[in-house]
Structures are given as structure tokens and as C-alpha cells.
Length: 315
Image 1 (cartoon, rainbow, N blue to C red):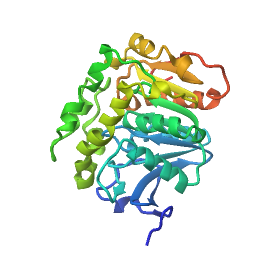
Image 2 (image 1 turned 135 degrees about the horizontal axis):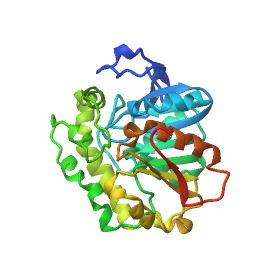
Image 3 (image 1 turned 180 degrees about the vertical axis):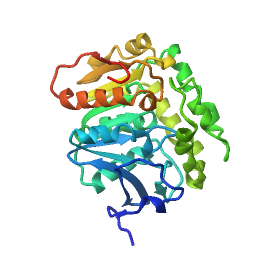
Image 4 (image 1 turned 30 degrees about the horizontal axis):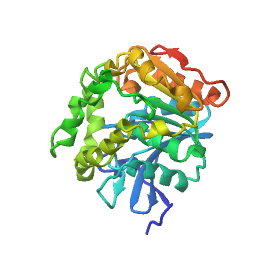
């Protein structure tokens, strides 16, 4: 019987549905109270934790994690609660349900502190961790999601246009519309979309869609609207990056909603990636790698500056 904190390694061809192909990853199930979390990892060295977005899984990092691992890092990619091959005893979600998964995995793997790379939904958990347990965050790279201290403006409202459909999601309805040209700069292949969405064959994942948005995303969005995080101090070195083709988060808008960064954060920078939209890890994986490696090195060493590096796709 598994006990909290235990791990078991399972061959890739025994997972249901089968894991999508990604060479070099080790796959384990990390057992904590009420949860069995699937974790894919690669490499050895200083730990880097990558938190995927929605409706993505650990596989989101397939083009990024191996390159970062080759630079001397151990890259850890968990499937967050309600996603991928992670199994939860309780189907309900609260505002910090996925954050609790992240903390439980860190504890189970004996990781006191790590670098973080987070996208979309995963950036919510990364942000929450930065505020609740800043000592565990060595550096934070937040992709396609503004910081908690953002100022709301009408220009960002279109970024929430997908929420009504997800709040009313019906079992069996495809989520492929989330990979439309509105959110990607480069069309994804049918094989890539299928690899992301095949795990919705698992009833737990399919049923988690509305629970996740109603229990976690909406409450956290309300906290942002009420300025909860603006009244807190963001301590870990944080770099927030957006694709230049991510319409609601055009560079002038982002700079405006982040203009209070010196009052709200110890170390904060912005970066913008050419030829990328919301799903920046698929649009420009090489640029994300370059941003991450650069930020790991200098994130805690240089004075804060809102003028982050500018990366082009393939840099």
C-alpha cells in the first residue's frame, strides 16, 4: 500500500490512456494524502519545477525541459490536480487546491527550494506559492499571465472570454477550440492537439473542467479584482513574459497594468516574445528556454528593472 510521500515508477506503456511520446523523461506517481500525483522529470542538478497551463499537461514542457536539463538542471513537471494522470480522492476544488498539490510534491520529493517556470493555470499556483511561501521560490518565470498586483483595465477583459464556455462545459465537448488562432501564433498539428486532449478520456479529468473554474479560477480572479495581492509584497525574483501576439496583453497594456511593480515587488521584470501568442511554449519554445536560463542565472543577482530582455523566436 502507498503511504504519503512514497513514489512508484510505472512503465510508460501501462498508463491509461497511454502517455504521449517525449524522450528522456522518468515518470512516477507521488503519493500524498488524498492524492496520487503524476510527475515527469528529466536531468540532474538544481531543481526546476514547471507548472503547466490548461488544457495542457506535463507534456507541455516536452520541447523545453530537455534543453534546460542539458544545462545542468533537474526539471520536474507534475500534472496538477484535475489534469493529466494525477488522481484525487476528492473531486472538489478550492482556491488553493492546485497550490496544495505543488507544495505536497515539493515536500514528497524533498525540495526545499526551486526555480519555477509556470504558464496559464500553473502561473496561478506559482503566484500563490510566491506569496504564501516565498522561501521556496528561487526564481519565478511566469508566462502569459500578469502578476497578482496587476491593475485591471478594460483592455484585458478579452483575456477572460473563454471562461463562460468552461464554466458551462458539458462532458464530451471537445476543448480543441482553446487552440484556435486567437490563442496560438502557429497552428498546432492534429497530433499535438490530440496529445493534449486525449487524457480527457479519463472521467476525473473531464469532470474537473467546471469544478476547476468554479472552485479555483473564479475565486482567485475575484481576489485579483479586489486587490488582495496588491496589498501583499511579492518577494521572489519574478519575470513575467508575454507573446507579442497575445492580443489582450499587448506590451503597452502590460506595462500600464504593471506600473506599480516597485511598490509591490522586490524584483520584477517584463519580457516580450516575438511570434508568440498565449500558448507561448508551443509557439516559441526556444525563446522560453532562453528566457528561463537567463533568469535562473541573474534573477537573484541584479537590480530590479522593468525592462526585461527581448527575445525573438529561436533566440
